[in-house]
Image (cartoon, rainbow, N blue to C red; front, side):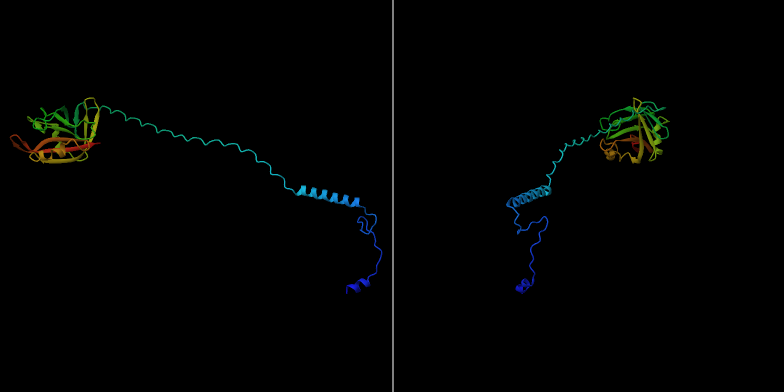
Length: 235
């Protein structure tokens, strides 16, 4: 078939095309070929330079960040000391006042040789034994007569004391100490020694213990058959 096609073609002389010299043209020189090759290499090099990626620009230097501020803590303000206690108007220094106004002068004394509570020498006095008013523990014991030589004493009021009553003590410097009654008991004099530590001990929270006599009069060394014990804690 190839033979037939070739045979059927009409051969004509080649027609030159402007700008594209054919190999059959005798005027194509070796120098022109070389020049074309050089121009092609130059164009290819230019193309390569155009598609070559640009080098990355160096990143700007990072300035060191300032260190975080050091946290500061403000120390808590010191608590102001409590204001000094003020003298009580109408109550003399060195006295004890009960809820209904009965007032006795305090006389500081120590236990007797047989460890008995001291008693005052007058109906308007109350002996004070045991802890101080500013003590954190122990009992401050105040003992007074219910009556004496026909006169009724301020401690007779203990027989009508009730839980919740207020007791005020003013020391020799005029400072007031307030207490609230929490316990009221009537104890036989014969039972009191066995409960002495319970009532008058110098351990446990600070408290005030008020003691007087009363009940039925039996005479002798006992006098009255009972003791009235009133316990109060700082108010």
